[in-house]
Image (cartoon, helix red, strand yellow):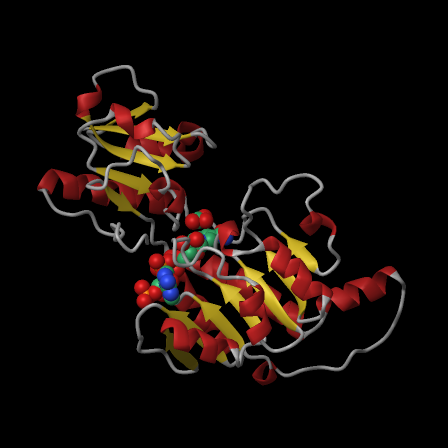
Length: 311
Ligand code: NDP
Ligand code: OXD
């Protein structure tokens, strides 16, 4: 079997490294565009594939993402509807995301931004403390990563709510909401909103003025899903009128964030370069091997996403 590496933003051969290439036993790994016989290519590893990438491979059966998200692969016009798309599920990635989100939640609770500003002015002034129990957190998305984030924040003492498409049994300390009515109910009790949704036609633009207006006044946004979830102008308006006190943004509609974009210098926005957490090359390798094994056995690969749902 042959596997093609396809990306317009990354040199995947370099990114995955020699260990990945060695572990891919009995699979010849080639880089796109592949000049040899394209009919042997049954598997691809992809990240931001060029629009016409998959046209060359008529027998392609599965495309593995190198991350948790698959939106950049699903957006590729040459991806046929019958091809399986596989995401990476990596508990270590969920743990890293949990730390990142907790950092920002606690930063808001304990007013770290104000203390940093005070330090720059050499000002010694205690601001008063708020208990975790008094800072309710609403999480959009209660999947592989959202579940870990929710459980850890609950352990830290925050009231945690999580929103998903379907109803859930939740661990202790986490309250579950689903559907449109569930979203309204959750937002009405949310001070810190964490976005951990996949990007789909249904979730695009969900972080907008209506969403922000439903939250507690002086709330905080932690945006770690995808840039297209956010309506940039609505965030700036919510910050200007005080509906939101601040925002931590890790993902952007255009990455890297363009020079001169207002987010770079807005005082109450923290920008990080899509670095909240990443999957390990080991986890990508394990996903790849399980996918190849499933293809050989004529089974559907584990962690294949639902193409209709978009995640
Ligand atoms: P999962 O697919 O495991 O979970 C997705 C969750 O979102 C599920 O709970 C699902 O509901 C819910 N959901 C999807 N669509 C809707 C909808 N229309 N209404 C309500 N809920 C919905 O994804 P992960 O937890 O693994 O990852 C989530 C996203 O986080 C990724 O897709 C990616 O965009 C982002 N990410 C960002 C990273 C970063 O570094 N910034 C790193 C990793 C991921 P249900 O359970 O009912 O199906
Ligand atoms: C992602 C990832 O999907 O890094 O953003 O896994």
